[in-house]
Image (tube, rainbow, N blue to C red; front, side, top):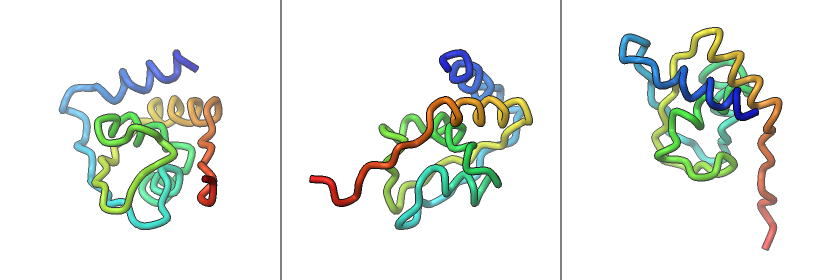
Length: 99
C-alpha cells in the first residue's frame, strides 16, 4: 500500500509539462469518490484527487460544500496506481447521525 501511495505522489509531482489540473467546487452531498466518478470517470480515482489536494483536505472522508479542489490530469500509470490504492484503502464514510 505504501508503495502505491508513494508512486502516486511521485507521479503527481511531475513537472509543469503535464496538463494543468482543473478546479471543481464541492457541492452538497458530494464525496471524493463521487467527484472522481463525475470528473475522471471512475470513483476509484479518489486517491488522486486527495493527493492533489492534501493542503485542502485533512480527512478524505470529509469534503465540504464550497471547497475548491484541483482535479489532476492523469496518465494511465497514475490511474492504475490510484485504483490500486483505492482497492487497498476503501473510503469508509462516517455515519451522518453519529454523536
